[in-house]
Length: 305
Ligand code: ADP
Image (spheres, rainbow, N blue to C red):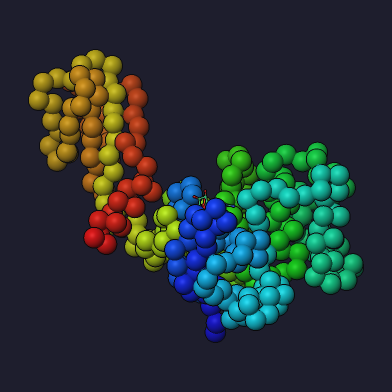
């Protein structure tokens, strides 16, 4: 069976001379739930743009379900549904028409298009908006409509570029449920995200991209296993006692009322909280010292050097 997406040696230099992709290789198997994960500016949208033909490549090859986009672009394109980051609707069109016109691009008869429109609007929880103009929809509804639009020709692969940008928590959850369901029915899903948590919640496999290069790839479980410690900063109401310590914990006072705690896997902060409050320095706030994604990059880059 051919891979859902196979990219080899992909390079992109923009007209201003900036090299956004420096030769990336990527393979996503059919049926996978895959994240292309990386910070802003890493090259995620450029990659997706090339796969969906919105951006021209400088060098390299892209195969979608075994079909090279240079050999038969329209056949390759039929295999994918794209949910871009930016909304790109005619705001005066109504919701159903958006889907029916999209189906029309793929030569789908109107009767079937209507049925599919109903099916996906229902699945995505916006069936009651069927006759509403686009401009009346909230951001989250527009985003769900973009997913419906990407699926109306029933592609084998669904690609989403930062799918939860501007989507509130509740809607995010229902979007995740829908994506999981469509994946369990056999559709390959590829998404880009800069949220490690999003990849962690949804995806089986990830590739991490940074500055136009894939820095690592593998199962999300394996990558997270390497993230074996996490650092927190605890702000206390009163000054920390001198030589404050809790057996088994790595603690560093960094200010009179701020304690840094390095938590190993399996440890939790409850014991430290209790000890602090017993010592008369109750915790008033806590924060993660660093972003876990950044930590993962550091781990990966250290491993590579
Ligand atoms: P991501 O999606 O990971 O945030 P992008 O693929 O959008 O990253 O961008 C990768 C890099 O390419 C960034 O440094 C961005 O500024 C640059 N870039 C994107 N589009 C253009 C363009 N049209 N012209 C020049 N540089 C661009």
